[in-house]
Length: 167
Image (cartoon, rainbow, N blue to C red; front, side, top):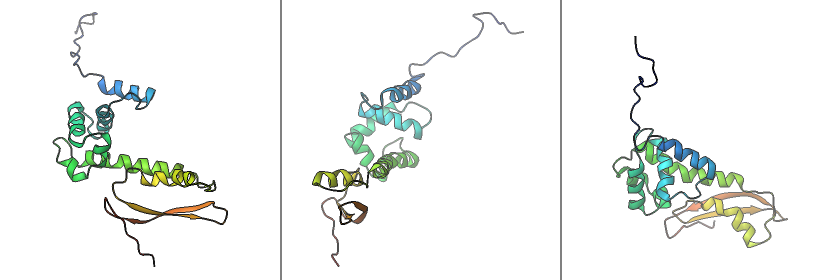
C-alpha cells in the first residue's frame, strides 16, 4: 500500500518557465498590453499558435528579423514561414491579427455623424487604412446633409501608387 504521509508524494520538479504562460495571460488581462515589450506581446500571441513549449526565443528572433511587432505583423506569409519554428498556422495567425483589428475598427466607425471637417473624414476613414502596406483609394459617400452613406474601396495599388479609371 502506498504511503500517504506528508512527504511521501513525489512532485515533479518545477522548471524555470513553469507557469510563465499563465502569468503572461493574467498580466495581459489585468493591464492590456501596457508595459509589454514587442517580443512579450508577440510571445503571448504565439501561445495560441504553438500550444506547448517556450516561444520566447522565437518571439525575440521574429522581432529582430522584422524590426518590431508591426514589422512582424506586416510581413508576408512566405517571409514568416522562412523563420525556423514558424509554420503556416503561426503565419496565418500573425496575418489575422491586423486584418481582425482593421475589421474591428471599421465596425466601430460611426457612420451616423455628419462629416463637417477634414478631421471628421479622417476619423471615419482611418480604420480602413489600418495595417495597410499598399496605397489604397476609398470612396466616402455622403448625402446632401453630409451624413455618411457608406465607405467602399475603389482601388489598391503598390507601395507607392494606386490607379483608378475615372470612367
